[in-house]
Image 1 (tube, rainbow, N blue to C red):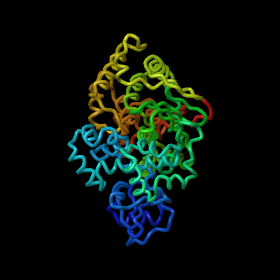
Image 2 (image 1 turned 180 degrees about the horizontal axis):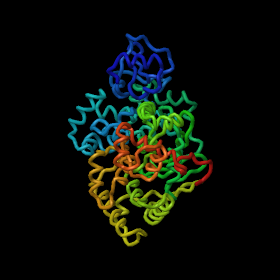
Image 3 (image 1 turned 120 degrees about the horizontal axis):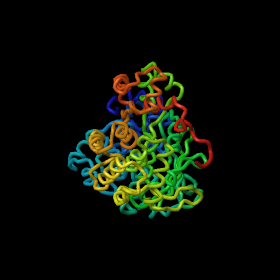
Image 4 (image 1 turned 60 degrees about the horizontal axis):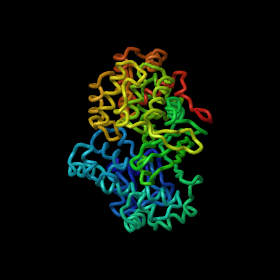
Length: 493
C-alpha cells in the first residue's frame, strides 16, 4: 500500500487507525516516522514519505515517534493472509528465527537460498532479514527498558543484542533517547507488580469481539496446560530457552498480557506466539466487509463484528489434540488430553495458579507405548504416525509453514480426513480461508440459516466468502448454544 501515495495521505490526514501496520509515514523535515493514526497535526504533504515497514524507515535514517510509538503498532495483516515466501519469512522473523538461527537458518526453514530470501524481502519491504530482526530487537529492548527494572546490561542481552554498545547505539538511533533516558520517561521503568512477571499491552485493530475468541480457548482448555482464572486465559508456553506462563485478558482497546519467563531472551518469541494465538494482526474491517456481502451472514456480522479465529500457541500440540478429539465430545477430548499431559508432560510450578505441565512435545510422545492410549486401535495408529512424522521433522506445522504442502502431508497420513486437516489449517497453520463444511456445528447453522447443508453445496456457496472462510466459520459457530461462544465468567475453570 505504501506505493499508493494519495491513499496513504488520506489515511494520515484522517488519522485512520485501520492502516496502522500497513505502512509508516516518514516526515522529511523532522526525520521522524509515525503510524497513520498518530495524534499530532499531520505534516505537509510535500514532507511525507511512506515506507512498508518500520525497519525500512529506520534504515532510511528516521527515528520512531515518541507520541504514537509506531514500532508497537499491530503487525501488517498481509503476513497472516498470505502464504508466499515474504509472508512466511515475516512470520518466522517475528517468531525470532533470525535471532536464534541467523539468516541461513531462516532460509533453510523456508526452503530457499539466503540470497533469494534477502532479494524478495528487500524488493517488497525495503529491508532485509537482518534489518527486520534488528527493528524487532529494538522494540523488545524498549519493552524491557520501560516495563522492568532490569539492569541495562541484562536488558540488552535479553533483547537479543550481542553487545551493550550495539544496544545503546540502536536504542538511541531508533528512539532518539538513550536507554537511561527512555526509562526515565516512564517513572523508572514501572517494574511489574509481581516479581518475575512482565506486564504488557498487546494492541489490535478494532473491532475485536472477545466472546468466541476467549470462549473457545477456555471451553477447550487442556487441564494443567490451560485455564480460565480471574478474568484471564492462562496457559503454559514451550519456549526456546525454557518454559513460560502467559495470562491474557481482554480490555476495550488492548489485550492485557502478563508473562512469566524462565529466560527473558524468549520475550519477543512469547509475544509473537500470543499475538498469533489471539489473531491480533487481523484486519477485521476487510474481513467483515467481505462476509457482509452475503445477505445470510450480514446480520451475524452486524450483531457482533470483529470475530477472530482462535488459534494455538503450538502447531504440533494442536495436531495431537485434533486427533484426540476426533468423533468425541469437547469434554472427552479435554479428558484424553489431560491424561496425556499428566503422563508425559514436563512439570512446572505456577504459584497461585492451576497450571502444572507443558504439553508433551512430539519427541516425548513418540516414545510412548501405544497400548497405554485409551482409544480405538485406528486412532492409536493415527496418533502414533502423526507424532513420529512430527518428531523426525518431516511435517512442519509451525507459523512459517507452507500451508498447501502441510495439507498434502496431513492428508497422506492414516486417519486424517478433511475435518481434521482443515481444523489444523485454520487454527495451527493460520490459513484465513480454511473451511469446515462437514463440521456438525456448521451444518446445523447452515440448516437454521437456510444455507445448503451438504458439504459440496455449502463449499460452492462459500466460495463468495473467500479468502475469509475461516472467519465465516466463527460467525456460523456463534449461532449455536455452546460454551465456545461465550466469554467465561470471572473465576477458575
